Length: 278
Image (cartoon, rainbow, N blue to C red):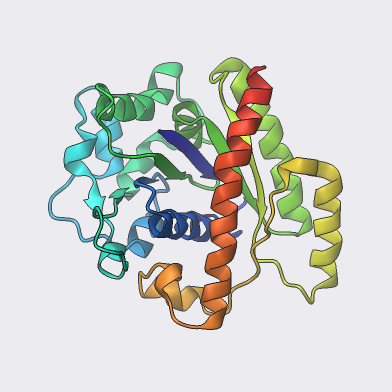
């Protein structure tokens, strides 16, 4: 089970949009996936078309982590109704619902015991190796407070999302330093999965300049492909629909990019993990 946190220290860069794009690609590829919506705004939960019927949200689960039953409280994504498959095994895309309640842990002073709460919830779900997921995507808040560090403790890799702009690039540098410090103190197996440049405008001289700067600064950590600004992305998210099932050439092209990005995250991240540990 691969656990990947999607993080950014700067809000507004499309972190949740990237999470949803990767979830759509995983669904299309038939990869059993769980999305954990750890952002108290719970936008990923909304975008995944969740229809809760009394399940506990992720904040409640991490509060009672030792006894938490993740499997009984995940909710199937509403995307499954739109997904087309060939009659084989039913696809799996589950959601651990976000909630403002989780904000009680989004503090800078969490101790090691609290940082392990999400790890405990996931360990309980996979205690006998029976968890059905190959991939877990954690949508983190845009901060370095308790919830993000809780996610990093539970993860093997962190995918960073950045726009090709000055403040976002500087924030990405800070996040990489934070990951290295966190890794040395709390999570020795944690490595960056890479950096995805999101909302790229091909006609922008500033974006062209910053992308070149990012390539120089981050080298192979900057993943290919970059994700262009999608004109109808708000409409797709507002409809709570997977981009792979949205009509039109633009959505088709974006879907192909997320397919490639998912492959980069899973394969390059695995290689990078070996390099860090070696």
